[in-house]
Length: 489
Ligand code: ZN
Image 1 (cartoon, rainbow, N blue to C red):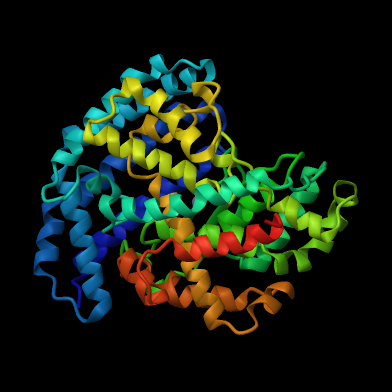
Image 2 (cartoon, protein in one colour):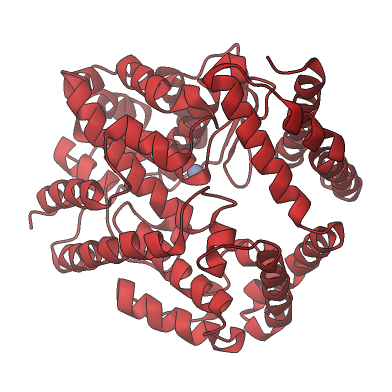
């Protein structure tokens, strides 16, 4: 059995993390702009407290002395030990310098992006990179320096493995995207889609997926996200635009994230293991609901009539077939967050290759914009007109977050692998989706993915759920089958 003192300390870490999550959620949904500065102080204080608790020698001693019973307690001690050791390896001075550099880079990055002036951002990115290199040096034994950064988002994944998997993904996606670009374009959704009606439909959709009014909230935010404060307190946020339906799909995406946190085994609640195991697995959940359920043909057999009823003027000229094609438009573009199901991972592959080169020191920051533009041409066949729509578009590097981007494409890959297993395990899946029923999918995900929280490493979780290792083949097969039919290639 775990000692009450160890349980108390893990509970405290969970609480501090939830408090930080609540403040962050509030900042993006409710807080008046004037609260920004004070909120920054409160969040920094909380982060310091959490870091002190996480690195406390007393916690290390309790973990050393722990005598866990059974698989669950063993997992708690193993993961808590790993979190503790990782946090202790980074000197407080370095951790503070990384936070400070990230905070200082925000305004110059936003300004550089607004004015298309990479030179303005360059010294801040160089500083972030220098600090990340020092961070990497705190850890020994990694095969590749980028492995240490990846591990913060996708525990256990290596650069070599990502290179191999992304190489195969790239080989499959580039010709598919090119074939679609050469085919007859899909119709576009004419719109408009009044926001109030979108909000109503989004809530109906979220409830059908598993949003329960006793444990969830939905609010508006500039950038949609999901935040769990506990499995029984899930916050999702949304944003709608009148000229398209992106807001609806973003809700499906965020509800997918929320369901993961909602269905974690309650016994893991305050152990620091009661949350998603990695960003890649998390993204697989959002992508599965958004793309594999939400953009599928049987799904729109059920929701198409509701969409037409909500937006008669915006949909009347489209046949059911055209509606499905319009919902699944593929168009290589400049901006990652606007990318479709086929081209999205290509944006990620570019960022991964550039990050690895930056960490290896084979790409100087001054050469980054040219490397970006050449990569966009090669991968997506698009010419980048300026850095605002190129290398400056994402916020991640201004925070010094390297190793994060790959998890988006890992999520797409894992979602497709899980979907193959779901299709095998749930008889009559299509009919259930066409009838608007998602309980069997939700239960399958709870059993094979959600309930485990952080007790099982991502690679192990995937292998237990699907019988396979990380493999881009199912994603490529599914995309080819779906889009070659939709685009009549
Ligand atoms: Zn996501």
